[in-house]
Length: 118
Length: 112
Image 1 (cartoon, each protein chain N blue to C red):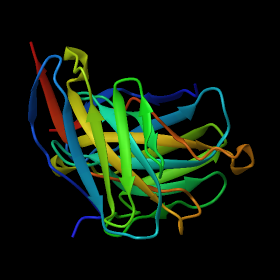
Image 2: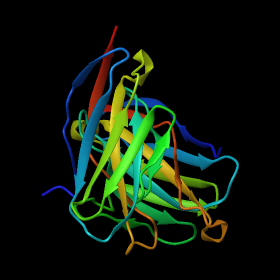
Image 3: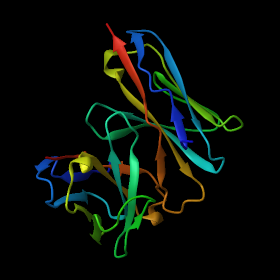
Image 4: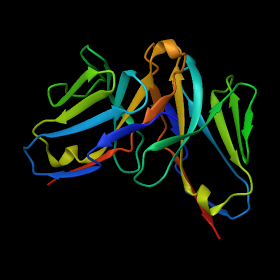
């Protein structure tokens, strides 16, 4: 099956610093990648949808200047949490969808990144 | 109102027993339905898609009721390894990007 990796798997940073999370599709080209956030005992909440070569589309309530998304290639999307605060501590998960021409709409999830802001 | 609602549980199930739980969705434009499994502090993994006619995958049976807008999952002969949180997931037909909407999950705990 398709493999999606995320790096780092966990990160601890100080309040006010920025953190970059990478999401890679390892064996397929992902024209669309999704970024989710999950707080304890809550559902995955979609933050934004990114398409290769274009600006990300953010869900309502998600600050685009705080959560910078770059989808520079068909296999890599990055999420940068800028000026992180303790309330940004969460489990960040990316998923990638195969090219529409493949006919497959399944999303493949990365293993997630646990961010702790102290 | 949440788009996808689930009973959070936990459902405590003796090993070998059967457990079933539902999920309701609010948007009638929902087109595709899935059950995902999420283990503690891990990413969700697709368990099975849910088809209109109902479908079975080993010990797991999923049903869809479009009229009442609910989906069910039944697990037979529960194993200890079935302990996890089960996420109900829907995709809208109107979303060209295929965005998924997740329920908060139903926790299942299988006990020896």
